[in-house]
Length: 71
Image (cartoon, rainbow, N blue to C red; front, side, top):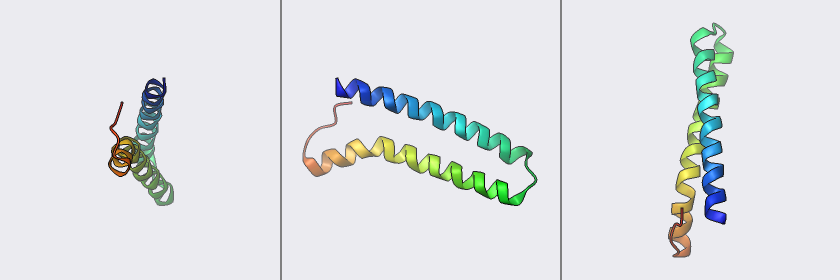
């Protein structure tokens, strides 16, 4: 079933996003190199944007297609 596959992939994405954010937080807290800190800040921003898109995409698609969100 497609809905259960989509939910599983969302769960996996959230898991990896959490690990990435945790590692980025550790790197930001311990790094003194300004360039690396800025790099991790951009990565964290990208992770949050990706998660927002992940959860809003089905709702946006439903609005455009006139369907309903099944997950």
